[in-house]
Length: 240
Ligand code: MG
Image (cartoon, rainbow, N blue to C red; front, side, top):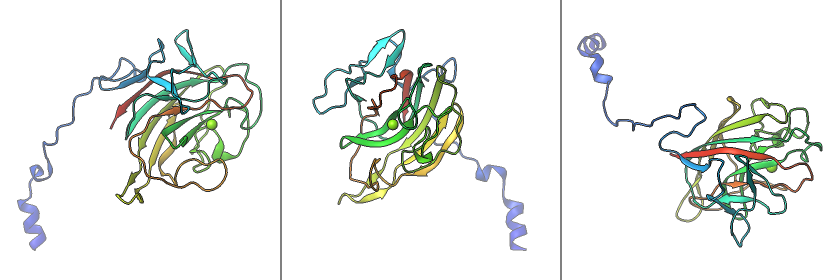
């Protein structure tokens, strides 16, 4: 009887609220164009938002031409000048049509979602259109941690699109982990990582672990394999 009475008195308005008000964001003309609050990291004209990821820093020496930024394997990784905490990232990349090699040595690159301690947390870029490797190291994987949910890759020579949501790890004052990093990622519009918890920084050999850090740059990998270098275009993010 008490429940019935309470239900009679309840109104729809009891569960409707008007604050906080979401900020207005003007979307791009197309969904792959940067929205009004985006930080544009590469628009096809120059690599000014990037520097060399080696300890000396200095200008990024990847090749910018025809609206693309191509990996320069002699120059090594590059990273953003700015640091970010949590964000939504859009990035497009292309494996050359004439790609050669097998396994991990075929169009290998990657995005270190936070560039820390000379490495970071890598989501893999690799040509797995018709190329097998260990599944926790294929395209869409959180390298050696999370196998992708699908392989929606297009053929070499076609553009591939990553949309990634990164939640940075948080650390306590004593440096111990407070909350693990999280990643949600879509590759070519298909969900490949669904809010996965990371075990720590990417390790090629051995188990991942955490070491305290704050906001960090984003790093693009220049992998040492001998296959043709890949290209990037249209890179932007929205800090969250
Ligand atoms: Mg890689």
